[in-house]
Image (cartoon, rainbow, N blue to C red):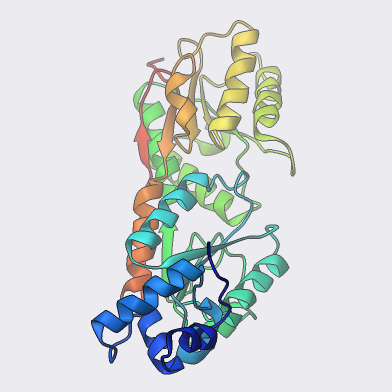
Length: 336
């Protein structure tokens, strides 16, 4: 049966050792005989005692924690990124502490301030809306805690990893154009957010490069704020089909869930995909390979994104990394 121990002082007294010796043994610091260090660790294990991470941070100036701040996991499709990030942090010998915010700037600032207070060794901030001089970020910087920003709204940080959404949408449009499509429905994408602006810019630039009259060729059906992606995709597809007697022959959706909602409406109304309308999603969600037909989509390269962020966090120098999504061609797109 475990006998409770609440402090290094209690453990030292039980073992007849100094608190200094016990503390250094538990924290794998030099200056303690190997046999004594093992005796201390074994006693701690039997007593169910572990040294305070926060206390260690207050003494040394840093803990062995890597803080991760992320907005809503479902809305931002972060589940895969978080999973990969957790594994990479542990592989590097650190421990992750995750703060999931309410996706507001205040929630983000509060989370960053908590991580600063416990003296994390580093912080990875996903989808930040804060500028570099705002409270939260500035406090980490002044404390000498490195911060890597993944896909922030403001890209002027010292350590930044960016998804090239503009390049992704250029690739999608070029693919559909190569199949003979000249009219394109754009579902759920608009320029009211930083991510949306990047996608619209990519579409417009690609359209001009392809010699399209972009005002006539790109038909935007923006998503209403707060609308569920599946239902939004279904609703926007109905809007697209009713807007013209000759609807676009190709569709690019905001994400895979939007695309799946659109696909369900097309099938309900008897439109054949891809024979009549080709369809492209975004995110390469697991279900894409199992829809009917399997969904052509853009893979944001989440694993590469996370590895780049961790590399930057552990690197002695700052820098910027750009990750380009890849088009995964399946059966939902075909020649017109």
